[in-house]
Image (tube, rainbow, N blue to C red; front, side, top):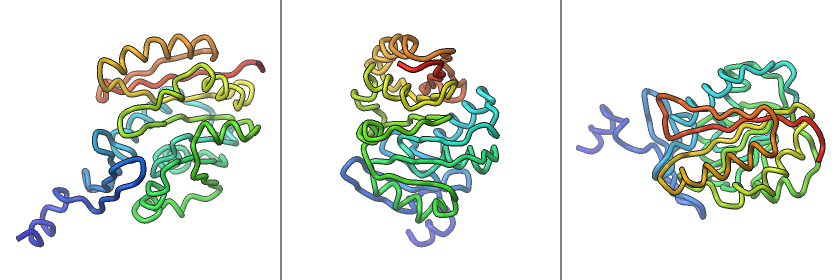
Length: 223
């Protein structure tokens, strides 16, 4: 019976489940495509993909001027796919992802190996930033353990480190999830810190995904 159900209703069953040191992960079918989920949220190519697609549509940057991109919390490659495949950005992309199981699933199910000019690091995002001096035109932050952003990534020290890795007028995009009352309270303090550090700050919201907000800003000068 289960074999018949899998044949005719594949969306009811995970394509693959994986357990890592950081999360429970599932690759599932949604609307005739594969997405990567954690227990409470989408990690790549589902609602998260829509949030970032809408973010870049609202920002509408000059993609031809974006040469170097850093994605902290690379996931299965949603941001990279939006930049390269949907917006034809000719950029070099550096991806940092702490969970090697996420990258393994990305290579197996989401054609990650087809993305050229991509440099991947299996590493903690804060450690990666602290160990490098390269500057980026676009820096995307999507750092979650399931539905929560670890506290160290919400501090002024981390935001200043992001700023220090931006080119002049470089753009930072920081995804934040208003999952519960605690996260909403923390967002108030975080926004204040963000506005003190970055220039031309915007806070983007999305009617279809009301729990997501995205903070964006630019660098104008060195610290």
